[in-house]
Image: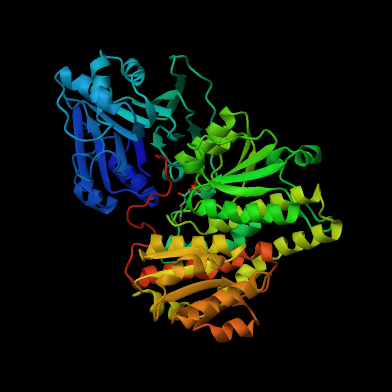
Length: 607
Ligand code: F6R
Protein backbone atom coordinates (compact mmCIF):
# COMPACT_ATOMS: atom_id res chain seq x y z
CA UNK A 1 0.00 0.00 0.00
CA UNK A 2 1.73 3.19 -1.24
CA UNK A 3 5.39 2.97 -2.14
CA UNK A 4 8.19 5.46 -1.65
CA UNK A 5 11.55 5.77 -3.39
CA UNK A 6 14.20 8.45 -2.99
CA UNK A 7 17.60 8.70 -4.64
CA UNK A 8 20.65 10.91 -4.25
CA UNK A 9 23.90 10.16 -6.03
CA UNK A 10 25.85 11.08 -9.13
CA UNK A 11 24.01 9.10 -11.83
CA UNK A 12 20.64 9.82 -13.43
CA UNK A 13 17.96 9.48 -10.74
CA UNK A 14 14.91 8.86 -12.96
CA UNK A 15 15.64 5.23 -13.94
CA UNK A 16 16.43 4.33 -10.32
CA UNK A 17 13.22 5.95 -9.09
CA UNK A 18 11.00 4.34 -11.72
CA UNK A 19 12.53 0.88 -11.22
CA UNK A 20 12.16 1.32 -7.43
CA UNK A 21 8.44 2.02 -7.91
CA UNK A 22 8.12 -0.94 -10.23
CA UNK A 23 9.57 -3.23 -7.58
CA UNK A 24 6.97 -2.02 -5.10
CA UNK A 25 4.04 -2.31 -7.51
CA UNK A 26 2.91 -5.49 -5.79
CA UNK A 27 1.95 -3.45 -2.72
CA UNK A 28 -1.05 -2.05 -4.62
CA UNK A 29 -1.54 1.51 -5.91
CA UNK A 30 -3.58 3.55 -8.34
CA UNK A 31 -1.34 6.47 -9.38
CA UNK A 32 2.33 7.37 -9.41
CA UNK A 33 4.59 10.39 -9.53
CA UNK A 34 8.13 11.66 -9.39
CA UNK A 35 9.90 14.93 -8.46
CA UNK A 36 13.49 15.69 -9.49
CA UNK A 37 15.67 18.48 -8.24
CA UNK A 38 16.75 19.83 -11.59
CA UNK A 39 18.11 23.11 -12.99
CA UNK A 40 17.72 24.83 -9.63
CA UNK A 41 14.01 23.96 -9.41
CA UNK A 42 11.61 21.04 -9.05
CA UNK A 43 10.63 18.95 -12.12
CA UNK A 44 7.45 16.95 -11.44
CA UNK A 45 5.45 14.39 -13.41
CA UNK A 46 2.45 12.39 -12.17
CA UNK A 47 0.10 9.90 -13.81
CA UNK A 48 -2.85 7.75 -12.81
CA UNK A 49 -2.69 4.03 -13.50
CA UNK A 50 0.37 1.86 -13.71
CA UNK A 51 4.04 2.72 -13.21
CA UNK A 52 4.47 1.90 -16.91
CA UNK A 53 2.41 5.06 -17.66
CA UNK A 54 4.71 7.14 -15.51
CA UNK A 55 7.76 5.53 -17.13
CA UNK A 56 6.46 6.65 -20.53
CA UNK A 57 5.73 10.16 -19.25
CA UNK A 58 9.25 10.64 -17.87
CA UNK A 59 11.17 8.86 -20.63
CA UNK A 60 12.64 12.15 -21.88
CA UNK A 61 12.97 13.67 -18.41
CA UNK A 62 16.04 15.61 -17.26
CA UNK A 63 19.25 14.12 -15.98
CA UNK A 64 18.90 15.22 -12.31
CA UNK A 65 20.72 13.12 -9.71
CA UNK A 66 18.37 13.76 -6.77
CA UNK A 67 14.69 12.84 -6.67
CA UNK A 68 11.74 11.28 -4.91
CA UNK A 69 8.91 9.11 -6.23
CA UNK A 70 5.71 7.51 -5.01
CA UNK A 71 2.94 5.08 -5.84
CA UNK A 72 -0.34 6.14 -4.20
CA UNK A 73 -3.21 3.98 -2.98
CA UNK A 74 -6.07 6.46 -2.60
CA UNK A 75 -7.38 7.21 0.90
CA UNK A 76 -8.12 10.97 1.07
CA UNK A 77 -9.42 12.06 -2.34
CA UNK A 78 -10.01 10.16 -5.57
CA UNK A 79 -7.56 8.70 -8.06
CA UNK A 80 -6.46 11.84 -9.93
CA UNK A 81 -3.20 13.32 -11.15
CA UNK A 82 -3.63 16.22 -8.72
CA UNK A 83 -3.94 13.83 -5.78
CA UNK A 84 -0.91 11.75 -6.79
CA UNK A 85 2.35 12.42 -4.91
CA UNK A 86 4.81 14.19 -4.75
CA UNK A 87 3.05 17.26 -3.34
CA UNK A 88 4.65 20.69 -3.45
CA UNK A 89 4.66 23.86 -1.37
CA UNK A 90 3.22 27.06 -2.91
CA UNK A 91 6.63 28.13 -4.30
CA UNK A 92 7.11 24.68 -5.83
CA UNK A 93 10.56 24.32 -4.25
CA UNK A 94 9.78 21.71 -1.58
CA UNK A 95 8.45 18.27 -2.59
CA UNK A 96 7.09 15.58 -0.28
CA UNK A 97 6.13 11.93 -0.68
CA UNK A 98 4.20 10.38 2.19
CA UNK A 99 2.92 6.98 3.29
CA UNK A 100 0.43 6.91 6.17
CA UNK A 101 -2.37 9.23 7.25
CA UNK A 102 -2.33 12.73 8.68
CA UNK A 103 -5.22 12.48 11.15
CA UNK A 104 -5.52 16.20 11.94
CA UNK A 105 -5.41 17.16 8.26
CA UNK A 106 -8.69 19.10 8.30
CA UNK A 107 -7.67 21.40 11.14
CA UNK A 108 -4.23 21.97 9.59
CA UNK A 109 -5.71 22.61 6.15
CA UNK A 110 -8.15 25.19 7.55
CA UNK A 111 -5.39 26.95 9.51
CA UNK A 112 -3.08 27.07 6.47
CA UNK A 113 -5.91 28.28 4.21
CA UNK A 114 -6.63 31.05 6.72
CA UNK A 115 -2.99 32.08 6.24
CA UNK A 116 -3.54 32.30 2.47
CA UNK A 117 -2.24 28.90 1.33
CA UNK A 118 -4.02 27.57 -1.76
CA UNK A 119 -4.32 23.77 -1.86
CA UNK A 120 -4.09 21.93 -5.18
CA UNK A 121 -5.25 18.48 -4.06
CA UNK A 122 -7.72 16.79 -1.72
CA UNK A 123 -5.02 14.79 0.03
CA UNK A 124 -4.03 14.82 3.68
CA UNK A 125 -0.38 14.79 2.53
CA UNK A 126 -0.49 18.26 1.01
CA UNK A 127 -0.47 19.91 4.44
CA UNK A 128 3.11 18.65 4.84
CA UNK A 129 4.92 20.70 2.13
CA UNK A 130 2.93 23.79 3.13
CA UNK A 131 3.78 23.37 6.80
CA UNK A 132 7.44 22.72 6.00
CA UNK A 133 7.49 25.88 3.86
CA UNK A 134 5.96 27.83 6.75
CA UNK A 135 8.82 26.83 9.06
CA UNK A 136 11.60 26.97 6.47
CA UNK A 137 14.19 29.64 6.85
CA UNK A 138 17.13 27.98 5.13
CA UNK A 139 17.55 24.87 7.33
CA UNK A 140 15.69 21.80 5.93
CA UNK A 141 16.13 19.66 9.05
CA UNK A 142 14.65 22.27 11.39
CA UNK A 143 11.77 23.00 9.02
CA UNK A 144 10.79 19.30 8.79
CA UNK A 145 11.10 18.78 12.55
CA UNK A 146 9.00 21.84 13.32
CA UNK A 147 6.35 20.81 10.80
CA UNK A 148 6.16 17.30 12.25
CA UNK A 149 5.48 18.75 15.70
CA UNK A 150 2.06 19.70 14.31
CA UNK A 151 1.24 16.37 12.65
CA UNK A 152 -0.93 13.73 14.34
CA UNK A 153 -1.04 10.36 12.60
CA UNK A 154 1.27 7.97 10.86
CA UNK A 155 3.90 8.76 8.30
CA UNK A 156 6.97 7.78 6.42
CA UNK A 157 8.07 10.85 4.43
CA UNK A 158 10.88 11.90 2.14
CA UNK A 159 11.34 15.60 1.47
CA UNK A 160 13.37 17.21 -1.32
CA UNK A 161 14.40 20.86 -1.30
CA UNK A 162 15.28 22.70 -4.54
CA UNK A 163 17.54 24.94 -2.43
CA UNK A 164 19.45 21.94 -1.04
CA UNK A 165 20.20 19.44 -3.82
CA UNK A 166 22.87 17.90 -1.59
CA UNK A 167 20.35 16.26 0.75
CA UNK A 168 17.01 14.57 1.25
CA UNK A 169 15.21 14.56 4.60
CA UNK A 170 13.45 11.41 5.74
CA UNK A 171 11.22 10.85 8.78
CA UNK A 172 9.20 7.98 10.15
CA UNK A 173 6.35 7.49 12.56
CA UNK A 174 4.50 4.25 11.92
CA UNK A 175 5.23 3.75 8.19
CA UNK A 176 8.40 1.83 7.35
CA UNK A 177 11.37 3.40 5.59
CA UNK A 178 14.77 1.99 4.81
CA UNK A 179 17.88 3.83 3.60
CA UNK A 180 20.28 1.81 1.45
CA UNK A 181 23.85 3.12 1.54
CA UNK A 182 25.72 2.49 -1.70
CA UNK A 183 29.00 3.65 -3.14
CA UNK A 184 28.58 7.41 -3.44
CA UNK A 185 24.79 7.15 -3.52
CA UNK A 186 21.85 6.49 -1.23
CA UNK A 187 18.51 4.89 -2.08
CA UNK A 188 15.52 5.35 0.23
CA UNK A 189 12.43 3.14 0.02
CA UNK A 190 9.41 1.97 1.93
CA UNK A 191 10.36 -1.59 1.04
CA UNK A 192 13.82 -3.21 0.96
CA UNK A 193 12.90 -4.76 -2.39
CA UNK A 194 13.47 -1.37 -4.04
CA UNK A 195 16.93 -1.07 -2.46
CA UNK A 196 18.48 -4.49 -2.77
CA UNK A 197 19.48 -4.22 -6.41
CA UNK A 198 21.67 -1.21 -5.52
CA UNK A 199 23.10 -2.14 -2.13
CA UNK A 200 22.59 -4.58 0.74
CA UNK A 201 23.85 -2.15 3.42
CA UNK A 202 20.77 -0.59 4.95
CA UNK A 203 19.58 1.46 7.90
CA UNK A 204 15.99 0.87 9.02
CA UNK A 205 14.49 4.01 10.42
CA UNK A 206 12.59 3.51 13.69
CA UNK A 207 9.48 5.40 14.79
CA UNK A 208 10.11 9.01 15.69
CA UNK A 209 13.44 9.06 13.91
CA UNK A 210 14.54 11.21 11.00
CA UNK A 211 17.53 11.00 8.70
CA UNK A 212 19.56 13.52 6.78
CA UNK A 213 20.47 11.63 3.64
CA UNK A 214 23.37 12.61 1.38
CA UNK A 215 25.03 10.70 -1.49
CA UNK A 216 26.47 7.60 0.21
CA UNK A 217 25.80 8.96 3.72
CA UNK A 218 23.00 8.74 6.26
CA UNK A 219 22.78 10.57 9.58
CA UNK A 220 19.95 9.47 11.88
CA UNK A 221 18.50 11.78 14.49
CA UNK A 222 15.76 11.60 17.11
CA UNK A 223 12.86 14.02 16.88
CA UNK A 224 14.64 16.05 19.57
CA UNK A 225 17.37 16.70 16.97
CA UNK A 226 20.03 14.58 18.78
CA UNK A 227 22.29 12.45 16.51
CA UNK A 228 21.83 8.67 17.04
CA UNK A 229 24.23 5.75 16.49
CA UNK A 230 23.99 4.35 12.99
CA UNK A 231 22.79 0.74 12.92
CA UNK A 232 23.82 -0.52 9.48
CA UNK A 233 22.47 -3.98 8.66
CA UNK A 234 22.92 -6.33 5.71
CA UNK A 235 19.70 -7.32 3.99
CA UNK A 236 19.11 -10.77 2.72
CA UNK A 237 19.74 -11.28 -0.99
CA UNK A 238 16.39 -13.14 -0.86
CA UNK A 239 14.78 -9.75 -1.08
CA UNK A 240 15.72 -9.66 -4.72
CA UNK A 241 12.43 -11.00 -5.95
CA UNK A 242 12.26 -9.47 -9.39
CA UNK A 243 12.62 -13.00 -10.74
CA UNK A 244 9.44 -15.01 -11.36
CA UNK A 245 11.54 -18.14 -11.99
CA UNK A 246 9.83 -18.76 -15.32
CA UNK A 247 6.28 -18.60 -13.98
CA UNK A 248 3.93 -16.16 -15.74
CA UNK A 249 2.84 -14.62 -12.42
CA UNK A 250 4.22 -14.28 -8.92
CA UNK A 251 1.05 -15.88 -7.54
CA UNK A 252 1.68 -19.09 -9.47
CA UNK A 253 5.37 -19.03 -8.56
CA UNK A 254 4.46 -18.65 -4.90
CA UNK A 255 1.87 -21.45 -5.04
CA UNK A 256 4.53 -23.77 -6.43
CA UNK A 257 7.10 -22.58 -3.93
CA UNK A 258 5.09 -23.98 -1.02
CA UNK A 259 6.98 -27.26 -0.57
CA UNK A 260 10.14 -25.14 -0.06
CA UNK A 261 8.55 -22.41 2.03
CA UNK A 262 6.87 -24.90 4.37
CA UNK A 263 10.16 -26.79 4.72
CA UNK A 264 11.96 -23.54 5.58
CA UNK A 265 9.39 -22.88 8.28
CA UNK A 266 9.97 -26.34 9.78
CA UNK A 267 13.74 -26.31 9.44
CA UNK A 268 15.51 -26.97 12.76
CA UNK A 269 12.27 -26.68 14.69
CA UNK A 270 11.04 -30.29 14.83
CA UNK A 271 12.76 -33.11 16.72
CA UNK A 272 11.04 -36.09 15.19
CA UNK A 273 12.47 -38.79 17.45
CA UNK A 274 11.59 -36.98 20.65
CA UNK A 275 8.28 -35.74 19.27
CA UNK A 276 9.26 -32.20 20.27
CA UNK A 277 9.27 -28.75 18.73
CA UNK A 278 11.46 -25.74 19.45
CA UNK A 279 10.79 -22.09 18.67
CA UNK A 280 13.74 -20.09 19.95
CA UNK A 281 12.17 -16.70 19.15
CA UNK A 282 9.47 -17.23 21.77
CA UNK A 283 12.08 -17.56 24.56
CA UNK A 284 9.68 -19.75 26.52
CA UNK A 285 10.65 -22.59 28.81
CA UNK A 286 8.25 -25.46 29.62
CA UNK A 287 7.41 -23.68 32.88
CA UNK A 288 6.28 -20.59 30.90
CA UNK A 289 4.30 -22.72 28.46
CA UNK A 290 2.51 -24.53 31.26
CA UNK A 291 1.37 -21.20 32.70
CA UNK A 292 -0.58 -20.35 29.51
CA UNK A 293 -4.29 -20.79 30.17
CA UNK A 294 -5.61 -19.56 26.83
CA UNK A 295 -4.23 -18.80 23.37
CA UNK A 296 -5.78 -16.11 21.18
CA UNK A 297 -4.57 -15.63 17.62
CA UNK A 298 -5.25 -12.23 16.04
CA UNK A 299 -5.02 -11.27 12.37
CA UNK A 300 -6.75 -9.97 9.25
CA UNK A 301 -7.85 -11.63 6.00
CA UNK A 302 -5.77 -14.65 5.11
CA UNK A 303 -3.78 -14.31 8.33
CA UNK A 304 -7.05 -14.48 10.26
CA UNK A 305 -7.90 -17.72 8.46
CA UNK A 306 -4.48 -19.15 9.30
CA UNK A 307 -4.99 -18.06 12.90
CA UNK A 308 -8.34 -19.89 12.97
CA UNK A 309 -6.80 -23.14 11.76
CA UNK A 310 -3.95 -22.74 14.26
CA UNK A 311 -6.30 -22.07 17.17
CA UNK A 312 -8.30 -25.21 16.34
CA UNK A 313 -5.14 -27.33 16.47
CA UNK A 314 -4.01 -25.74 19.73
CA UNK A 315 -7.33 -26.57 21.37
CA UNK A 316 -7.53 -30.08 19.89
CA UNK A 317 -3.95 -31.20 20.51
CA UNK A 318 -2.70 -29.11 23.43
CA UNK A 319 -6.13 -28.95 25.11
CA UNK A 320 -5.67 -25.27 25.84
CA UNK A 321 -8.72 -23.09 25.11
CA UNK A 322 -7.95 -21.18 21.92
CA UNK A 323 -9.72 -19.04 19.36
CA UNK A 324 -8.95 -16.46 16.69
CA UNK A 325 -10.01 -12.80 16.59
CA UNK A 326 -10.32 -10.37 13.68
CA UNK A 327 -7.76 -7.72 14.59
CA UNK A 328 -9.83 -4.73 13.42
CA UNK A 329 -12.73 -5.80 15.65
CA UNK A 330 -10.64 -6.83 18.60
CA UNK A 331 -8.77 -3.57 18.97
CA UNK A 332 -11.98 -1.53 19.31
CA UNK A 333 -14.31 -3.72 21.27
CA UNK A 334 -12.83 -3.07 24.66
CA UNK A 335 -11.68 -6.66 25.16
CA UNK A 336 -10.88 -8.33 28.44
CA UNK A 337 -7.18 -9.18 28.32
CA UNK A 338 -6.48 -12.11 30.61
CA UNK A 339 -3.04 -12.05 32.19
CA UNK A 340 -2.45 -15.77 31.73
CA UNK A 341 -3.42 -15.75 28.04
CA UNK A 342 -0.91 -15.77 25.21
CA UNK A 343 -1.80 -13.68 22.16
CA UNK A 344 -0.24 -14.46 18.79
CA UNK A 345 -0.41 -11.65 16.21
CA UNK A 346 -0.39 -13.31 12.78
CA UNK A 347 0.79 -11.12 9.91
CA UNK A 348 2.69 -11.77 6.70
CA UNK A 349 3.86 -8.17 6.24
CA UNK A 350 4.19 -7.34 9.91
CA UNK A 351 2.87 -3.88 8.98
CA UNK A 352 -0.92 -4.32 8.98
CA UNK A 353 -2.33 -1.32 10.84
CA UNK A 354 -5.27 -3.21 12.38
CA UNK A 355 -3.11 -6.06 13.65
CA UNK A 356 -0.57 -3.60 15.00
CA UNK A 357 -3.43 -1.69 16.68
CA UNK A 358 -4.61 -4.92 18.35
CA UNK A 359 -1.04 -5.66 19.50
CA UNK A 360 -0.76 -2.20 21.06
CA UNK A 361 -4.14 -2.57 22.78
CA UNK A 362 -3.13 -5.94 24.23
CA UNK A 363 0.20 -4.52 25.42
CA UNK A 364 -1.50 -1.47 26.92
CA UNK A 365 -3.67 -3.75 29.03
CA UNK A 366 -0.67 -5.76 30.23
CA UNK A 367 -1.26 -8.78 27.98
CA UNK A 368 1.44 -11.04 26.59
CA UNK A 369 1.58 -10.87 22.78
CA UNK A 370 4.05 -12.39 20.34
CA UNK A 371 4.30 -12.21 16.56
CA UNK A 372 3.85 -14.86 13.88
CA UNK A 373 5.36 -12.78 11.12
CA UNK A 374 7.08 -13.18 7.77
CA UNK A 375 8.94 -9.91 7.22
CA UNK A 376 11.99 -9.79 9.45
CA UNK A 377 12.36 -6.53 11.37
CA UNK A 378 8.81 -5.41 10.49
CA UNK A 379 6.85 -3.21 12.87
CA UNK A 380 4.81 -6.03 14.44
CA UNK A 381 7.95 -8.15 14.86
CA UNK A 382 9.69 -5.27 16.61
CA UNK A 383 6.69 -4.18 18.67
CA UNK A 384 6.09 -7.67 20.02
CA UNK A 385 9.80 -8.27 20.51
CA UNK A 386 9.33 -12.04 20.66
CA UNK A 387 7.71 -14.45 18.23
CA UNK A 388 8.05 -16.84 15.35
CA UNK A 389 9.28 -15.91 11.91
CA UNK A 390 7.48 -18.04 9.33
CA UNK A 391 10.38 -17.79 6.82
CA UNK A 392 8.22 -18.08 3.72
CA UNK A 393 10.49 -15.63 1.86
CA UNK A 394 9.18 -12.43 0.25
CA UNK A 395 5.60 -12.78 -0.95
CA UNK A 396 5.09 -10.51 -3.94
CA UNK A 397 1.64 -11.41 -5.32
CA UNK A 398 -1.03 -9.38 -3.56
CA UNK A 399 -3.07 -12.53 -2.89
CA UNK A 400 -1.42 -14.42 -0.09
CA UNK A 401 -0.71 -18.12 -0.74
CA UNK A 402 2.60 -19.37 0.60
CA UNK A 403 2.34 -17.12 3.65
CA UNK A 404 -0.94 -18.84 4.61
CA UNK A 405 0.59 -22.31 4.58
CA UNK A 406 3.69 -21.13 6.45
CA UNK A 407 1.58 -19.33 9.05
CA UNK A 408 -0.44 -22.50 9.66
CA UNK A 409 2.79 -24.52 9.77
CA UNK A 410 4.35 -22.18 12.35
CA UNK A 411 1.21 -22.35 14.50
CA UNK A 412 1.28 -26.15 14.29
CA UNK A 413 4.91 -26.19 15.41
CA UNK A 414 3.86 -24.03 18.34
CA UNK A 415 0.97 -26.41 19.00
CA UNK A 416 3.35 -29.35 19.28
CA UNK A 417 5.64 -27.39 21.57
CA UNK A 418 2.74 -26.44 23.83
CA UNK A 419 1.02 -29.83 23.67
CA UNK A 420 4.13 -31.72 24.80
CA UNK A 421 4.22 -29.69 28.01
CA UNK A 422 0.65 -30.91 28.63
CA UNK A 423 -1.09 -34.18 27.85
CA UNK A 424 0.48 -35.14 24.55
CA UNK A 425 2.47 -38.35 25.04
CA UNK A 426 5.80 -39.18 23.42
CA UNK A 427 4.26 -41.48 20.76
CA UNK A 428 1.58 -38.91 19.90
CA UNK A 429 4.22 -36.17 19.84
CA UNK A 430 6.25 -38.30 17.44
CA UNK A 431 3.18 -38.80 15.25
CA UNK A 432 2.46 -35.05 15.17
CA UNK A 433 6.12 -34.30 14.36
CA UNK A 434 6.11 -36.91 11.59
CA UNK A 435 2.87 -35.54 10.14
CA UNK A 436 4.38 -32.05 10.05
CA UNK A 437 7.65 -33.23 8.61
CA UNK A 438 5.96 -34.99 5.71
CA UNK A 439 3.82 -32.00 4.63
CA UNK A 440 6.29 -30.66 2.01
CA UNK A 441 6.29 -34.09 0.31
CA UNK A 442 2.48 -34.18 0.19
CA UNK A 443 2.35 -30.63 -1.15
CA UNK A 444 4.83 -31.54 -3.90
CA UNK A 445 2.84 -34.68 -4.69
CA UNK A 446 -0.41 -32.71 -5.06
CA UNK A 447 1.10 -29.90 -7.12
CA UNK A 448 2.55 -32.42 -9.58
CA UNK A 449 -0.94 -33.66 -10.33
CA UNK A 450 -3.47 -31.03 -9.27
CA UNK A 451 -6.53 -32.69 -10.85
CA UNK A 452 -9.22 -31.21 -13.11
CA UNK A 453 -8.81 -27.55 -12.13
CA UNK A 454 -9.67 -26.50 -15.71
CA UNK A 455 -13.07 -28.20 -15.41
CA UNK A 456 -13.74 -26.27 -12.21
CA UNK A 457 -12.80 -23.02 -13.94
CA UNK A 458 -15.33 -23.75 -16.71
CA UNK A 459 -18.06 -24.16 -14.08
CA UNK A 460 -17.27 -21.20 -11.84
CA UNK A 461 -16.08 -18.54 -14.29
CA UNK A 462 -19.58 -17.54 -15.38
CA UNK A 463 -21.38 -18.39 -12.15
CA UNK A 464 -23.57 -15.77 -10.49
CA UNK A 465 -22.61 -17.12 -7.09
CA UNK A 466 -20.21 -19.73 -5.71
CA UNK A 467 -20.56 -21.32 -2.29
CA UNK A 468 -17.63 -22.82 -0.38
CA UNK A 469 -18.22 -25.09 2.59
CA UNK A 470 -16.27 -27.12 5.10
CA UNK A 471 -16.30 -28.20 8.72
CA UNK A 472 -13.69 -28.20 11.45
CA UNK A 473 -10.22 -27.60 9.97
CA UNK A 474 -11.82 -27.26 6.55
CA UNK A 475 -13.94 -24.26 7.58
CA UNK A 476 -11.04 -21.73 7.62
CA UNK A 477 -9.91 -23.32 4.35
CA UNK A 478 -13.36 -22.68 2.83
CA UNK A 479 -13.12 -19.05 4.00
CA UNK A 480 -9.66 -18.77 2.47
CA UNK A 481 -10.78 -20.35 -0.83
CA UNK A 482 -13.67 -17.87 -1.12
CA UNK A 483 -11.40 -14.94 -0.28
CA UNK A 484 -8.92 -15.98 -3.01
CA UNK A 485 -11.69 -16.30 -5.63
CA UNK A 486 -13.06 -12.85 -4.71
CA UNK A 487 -9.64 -11.22 -4.77
CA UNK A 488 -8.36 -12.72 -8.02
CA UNK A 489 -11.46 -13.43 -10.11
CA UNK A 490 -13.85 -10.83 -8.57
CA UNK A 491 -16.59 -13.48 -8.40
CA UNK A 492 -19.43 -13.24 -5.89
CA UNK A 493 -18.87 -16.06 -3.46
CA UNK A 494 -19.01 -16.84 0.21
CA UNK A 495 -17.97 -19.56 2.62
CA UNK A 496 -20.01 -21.25 5.28
CA UNK A 497 -19.40 -23.85 7.93
CA UNK A 498 -21.27 -26.79 6.38
CA UNK A 499 -23.52 -27.14 9.43
CA UNK A 500 -24.83 -23.63 8.84
CA UNK A 501 -26.23 -24.52 5.40
CA UNK A 502 -29.71 -25.28 6.63
CA UNK A 503 -29.80 -22.06 8.64
CA UNK A 504 -29.98 -19.83 5.59
CA UNK A 505 -27.43 -20.20 2.77
CA UNK A 506 -29.17 -23.21 1.23
CA UNK A 507 -31.75 -20.73 -0.07
CA UNK A 508 -29.09 -19.56 -2.53
CA UNK A 509 -28.77 -22.97 -4.18
CA UNK A 510 -30.53 -23.38 -7.51
CA UNK A 511 -30.00 -25.62 -10.53
CA UNK A 512 -26.30 -25.44 -11.45
CA UNK A 513 -24.98 -23.37 -8.50
CA UNK A 514 -21.33 -24.35 -7.97
CA UNK A 515 -20.66 -25.58 -4.43
CA UNK A 516 -17.02 -26.17 -3.56
CA UNK A 517 -16.87 -28.54 -0.61
CA UNK A 518 -13.70 -29.26 1.35
CA UNK A 519 -14.30 -32.71 2.65
CA UNK A 520 -11.14 -34.63 3.54
CA UNK A 521 -11.19 -37.93 5.39
CA UNK A 522 -11.53 -36.70 8.96
CA UNK A 523 -14.09 -37.17 11.72
CA UNK A 524 -16.33 -34.47 10.26
CA UNK A 525 -16.51 -36.16 6.84
CA UNK A 526 -19.83 -37.95 7.41
CA UNK A 527 -21.50 -34.70 8.46
CA UNK A 528 -20.28 -32.80 5.41
CA UNK A 529 -21.34 -35.69 3.22
CA UNK A 530 -24.92 -35.25 4.48
CA UNK A 531 -24.72 -31.52 3.71
CA UNK A 532 -23.51 -32.34 0.21
CA UNK A 533 -26.51 -34.58 -0.35
CA UNK A 534 -28.74 -31.71 0.71
CA UNK A 535 -27.27 -29.32 -1.84
CA UNK A 536 -27.18 -32.03 -4.50
CA UNK A 537 -30.93 -32.54 -4.03
CA UNK A 538 -31.40 -28.84 -4.85
CA UNK A 539 -29.44 -28.98 -8.11
CA UNK A 540 -26.00 -27.78 -6.98
CA UNK A 541 -22.96 -28.69 -9.07
CA UNK A 542 -20.64 -30.19 -6.51
CA UNK A 543 -16.92 -29.70 -6.66
CA UNK A 544 -15.38 -31.81 -3.92
CA UNK A 545 -11.88 -31.59 -2.51
CA UNK A 546 -11.51 -35.07 -1.03
CA UNK A 547 -8.87 -37.50 0.16
CA UNK A 548 -7.31 -39.80 -2.44
CA UNK A 549 -9.19 -43.09 -2.51
CA UNK A 550 -12.44 -41.71 -1.06
CA UNK A 551 -14.62 -43.13 -3.85
CA UNK A 552 -17.90 -42.28 -2.16
CA UNK A 553 -17.24 -38.53 -2.26
CA UNK A 554 -15.70 -38.77 -5.74
CA UNK A 555 -18.84 -40.50 -7.02
CA UNK A 556 -21.17 -37.92 -5.48
CA UNK A 557 -19.25 -34.95 -6.90
CA UNK A 558 -19.64 -33.48 -10.39
CA UNK A 559 -15.94 -32.66 -10.27
CA UNK A 560 -13.66 -34.40 -7.78
CA UNK A 561 -10.20 -33.20 -6.80
CA UNK A 562 -8.11 -35.63 -4.79
CA UNK A 563 -5.58 -34.53 -2.19
CA UNK A 564 -3.10 -36.80 -0.37
CA UNK A 565 -4.18 -38.52 2.84
CA UNK A 566 -2.84 -36.52 5.79
CA UNK A 567 -3.65 -36.05 9.48
CA UNK A 568 -6.63 -33.77 10.08
CA UNK A 569 -4.65 -30.94 11.73
CA UNK A 570 -2.29 -30.60 8.72
CA UNK A 571 -5.12 -30.94 6.19
CA UNK A 572 -5.46 -27.13 5.64
CA UNK A 573 -1.93 -27.21 4.23
CA UNK A 574 -3.04 -29.45 1.36
CA UNK A 575 -6.76 -28.75 0.97
CA UNK A 576 -6.03 -25.06 0.38
CA UNK A 577 -3.81 -25.84 -2.66
CA UNK A 578 -6.59 -26.65 -5.17
CA UNK A 579 -8.50 -23.56 -3.98
CA UNK A 580 -5.46 -21.36 -4.68
CA UNK A 581 -5.19 -22.88 -8.15
CA UNK A 582 -8.93 -22.51 -8.85
CA UNK A 583 -8.72 -18.80 -7.99
CA UNK A 584 -5.57 -18.33 -10.09
CA UNK A 585 -6.85 -20.10 -13.20
CA UNK A 586 -10.32 -18.53 -12.97
CA UNK A 587 -8.63 -15.13 -12.76
CA UNK A 588 -6.63 -15.99 -15.89
CA UNK A 589 -9.76 -17.19 -17.72
CA UNK A 590 -11.47 -13.89 -16.90
CA UNK A 591 -8.46 -11.79 -17.93
CA UNK A 592 -7.81 -10.39 -14.43
CA UNK A 593 -4.63 -8.65 -13.31
CA UNK A 594 -3.43 -11.60 -11.22
CA UNK A 595 -0.56 -10.13 -9.22
CA UNK A 596 -2.20 -6.74 -8.76
CA UNK A 597 -5.93 -7.23 -8.33
CA UNK A 598 -8.08 -4.10 -8.36
CA UNK A 599 -8.48 -2.04 -5.18
CA UNK A 600 -6.15 -4.24 -3.15
CA UNK A 601 -2.86 -3.51 -1.47
CA UNK A 602 -0.23 -5.95 -0.29
CA UNK A 603 0.49 -4.32 2.97
CA UNK A 604 -2.49 -2.57 4.51
CA UNK A 605 -0.82 0.12 6.58
CA UNK A 606 -3.96 2.22 7.10
CA UNK A 607 -7.15 1.28 8.92
C1 F6R B 1 -5.39 -11.98 1.12
C2 F6R B 1 -4.46 -11.09 1.77
C3 F6R B 1 -4.95 -10.24 2.89
C4 F6R B 1 -3.92 -10.24 4.03
C5 F6R B 1 -4.33 -9.24 5.12
C6 F6R B 1 -3.37 -9.27 6.29
O1 F6R B 1 -4.81 -12.64 0.05
O2 F6R B 1 -3.32 -11.04 1.41
O3 F6R B 1 -6.20 -10.66 3.35
O4 F6R B 1 -3.83 -11.53 4.55
O5 F6R B 1 -4.37 -7.96 4.58
O6 F6R B 1 -2.08 -8.97 5.89
P1 F6R B 1 -0.83 -9.36 6.76
O7 F6R B 1 -0.75 -10.84 6.82
O8 F6R B 1 0.33 -8.74 6.06
O9 F6R B 1 -1.06 -8.79 8.13
